[in-house]
Image 1 (cartoon, one colour):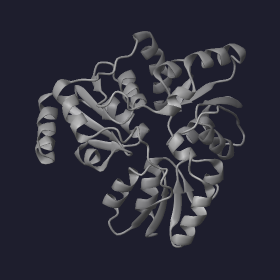
Image 2 (image 1 turned 45 degrees about the vertical axis):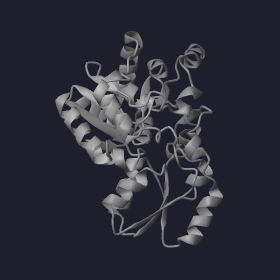
Image 3 (image 1 turned 180 degrees about the vertical axis):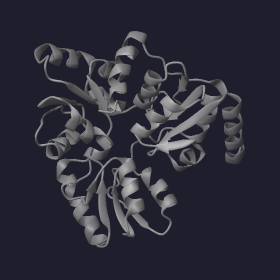
Image 4 (image 1 turned 90 degrees about the horizontal axis):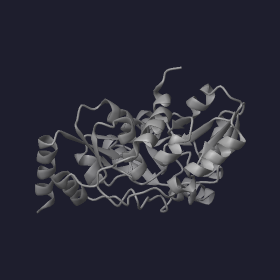
Length: 303
């Protein structure tokens, strides 16, 4: 089967099964182009809640598909590649949070979307890179445990200095590897370019950037800016959308390390087979799902 034939089959199967394809901004170009919606974590789980589709094929990594299932339990959620995971998810577990809760019952636990359903079930509130600063400002507590990303935790401490952020020692392997020197090197190569980075990068990298934000915020900034050149400090999959939406602008990847191999595991053939066989369905223990749902839903509450 050729690629074009496979795309036609995917479209047919999707219609036949009343399905929808969601793809994260970090997915390969071929998948972004056939998806019904491409976005960051916050946008994708919002779409999962609002879609009328009966089947959601989530092209991304496990915690995203889990989050969709937590919030839309009556829909069938498929993850095309079951071992497409996120190493950061495994850097905090439910038992560690239970221990913290017993020792510090009055300190709220804020978990990043990059966490397991079980960890979300033990947390008070969930966030994404798009809404974390806003949510922290609104939490009625002076001290907050943030898990598991230490770099976003340090970014938070600077953005919301009136709150004490207790930091976990987890990190995104992809963003954490970016070095401050790479910012300097790229600025010399492209002196007219602005540096836009994700807060999952280290504080030393973020301090050298012109803008720090989620993937969607980076895309919006580049789309609206009058500047014509940008150095992008997040996973390389974002470049496809940036170039597609801004054909007259130039985009350079900040570091060759900005490739998430888990996000790149999913190929067009995996999408096709998942739809054809309705395989790799996400299932979550109902007791855990209900507790995790409370944690996730709180971030949509207007305060």
